[in-house]
Length: 123
Image 1 (spheres, rainbow, N blue to C red):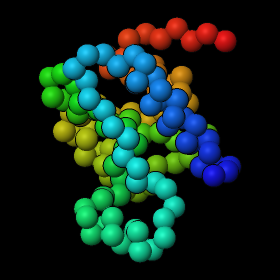
Image 2 (image 1 turned 90 degrees about the vertical axis):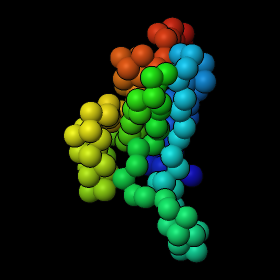
Image 3 (image 1 turned 120 degrees about the vertical axis):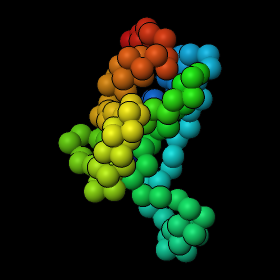
């Protein structure tokens, strides 16, 4: 893995590490691995199993059962049309949805949502 994929992978790993370290009790979360390059056979199998385009990279469920959606993007990468449609659907339904372009930005969003306690990052 190189270049742009590595940058987004680094953000994803940082977010997962933060959630493992500081996720508040009662929150559930998972990464939705939709974005990796796959051969046609694997892509067809996943499509047949129900994988849908546009879903966010991280889905969280609060202790009250409310979903929260966090999309991770590198640099100035734009949302795909399917991601825009999903975002609009979630916002219209009152589901918190955000995009983060760095680990620090994701941590700010997750803290605002109450999903993680404040982290002290040491150099």
